Length: 204
Image (cartoon, rainbow, N blue to C red):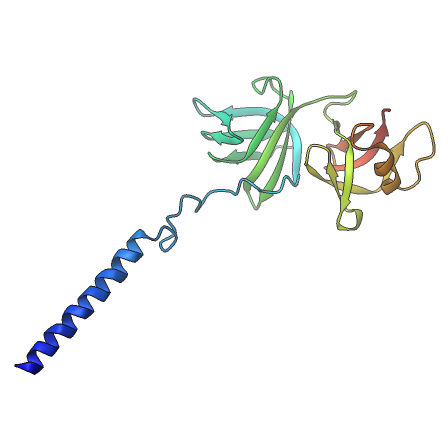
């Protein structure tokens, strides 16, 4: 009888332990990859521009918009170099383009992971050669031994070897130019053919 009682007691303890583990597992959002953040893109994604081109057409689902820095709905953009890029819902984004519905009036800039858009921005075409050069804010810093640059708006761009410094006076090195003319006394010219900055111009 005592042995039977002990067996039942241990069985009850075992059942309680298994039940507790099962309930804890069900309440764990991350155990099965069901966290709210799983599958989504971090809001702190780097605004590293790896793809840039004039947007020939921008197609969007009904009700598409950017809300709180993320897209609501899906969209796709056809670029002037023939690439067709899909933009998933809930992608970090910013829109500085006056009319995205007008063909070839916006430039598309994006941080990519393979074929997936991690972050993107739309901005108006500008300057004397809108399909070849995009004028951007001042260059305020350099990264990776000068191969990338940080703009005043937080965007990160590729820098060409030997960036041209256009000013009415001798500017020295690019670092010296940045020290003298950032954050609001220069503009940065992004070449839309080779997707990198090849000139900075002082404006003050």
